[in-house]
Length: 104
Image (tube, rainbow, N blue to C red; front, side, top):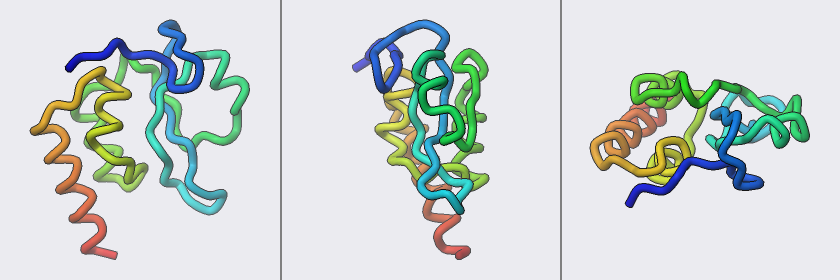
């Protein structure tokens, strides 16, 4: 089911960016969320990546998994970023997580 995309923290629907909230200070990997401008300013410095939501498509989303920028649950992350979780996108992201984990 499609849900409108909104800030993961306050529910705002304007000036949204995909952010990765770092899992730890010594990691470049983070949890995928969507934050508005005000919430990004509140948490400035705690993000690995900040990408305007208008620039995020399927390929960029998958690249985050491929490049080790996140290991967020793909179903939840897709719902947060796109408003819905396409099963083929979720499956591909899961495969990328498994591939990365097998190479560790």
